[in-house]
Image (cartoon, rainbow, N blue to C red; front, side, top):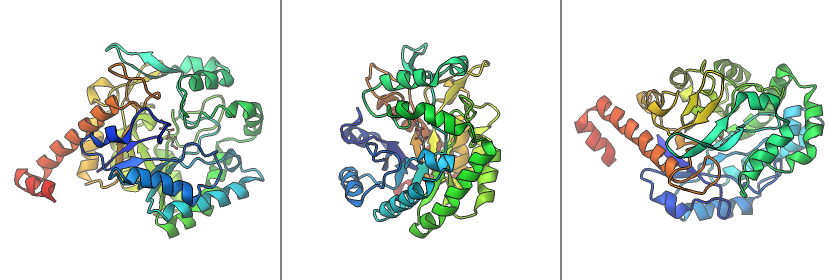
Length: 365
Ligand code: DNO
């Protein structure tokens, strides 16, 4: 387990790399060029600048989250060829700097979706909240305004410019059902996977968050069946998954321990976080601690440890605690606590597995 921490860039994050450096066990920074418009090529000089800064703290830069996919590719329209070529060039440019994993998603229009960014929890902290009934009734434009108003910083997937094209996009997606979206994903993968493979990069698709259709838009990366379908598209080692316990696990039918058991070997990257799911389908994000939510985080880490998982793992969204003012879900404190929980679970399981004597040697390596 190679522990990483997501960071949004200098001037675009309330957390500094000096602070991240003090969280035990963090080896790498999960990064992206967040200022780049979706679909533009990430140029060598821009990548180099970001990477050099992160590496100057002794962190690796193996994982990028995300290189977002332009809507034309998801819609399969005439412009997709252009954007696919750009995507390929970005992959090649990232490979120049030794990037190993690119996380991406294939959600139409909206990325992660919540109705409240700072929902009060019983312990006095706040967290991201999803109210099913609200999403069923709210005007999507209103939701974009609510989400983007929550922070002055860029929120990936929630670019305010989206508002300018939202009606056109909804109109275009009227023609796209799940099957067609799968077809467009397949087209994209057939184009980019050979390039990724040649570059030694894994393209790790992120599950839809939440893993069900919203606003009548199709969502297709929702559970085990989606993984089976993805594997049927291509057996390239670059055709990979991002295992996200909180996204896929928001549907209680998805047993994340079983999913980790089956698909961790196809997942070079894992997001580990907890959510508390209510009977009405609402959910709230909690601390990473298993007992605080509905997802068996302990079981997931034990499963990864069983497999001696060597992929990249990051704590994911946390609560906003101790008065921290930060971007929604991405404060320092709760993700630092989450990191320690994940490492604790891992170490405890590993020690049981190999025995105290070997463990001591193992940690020395
Ligand atoms: C939200 C994140 C997502 C994720 C993308 C991956 O906090 O989990 O924005 O990065 O969906 O492409």
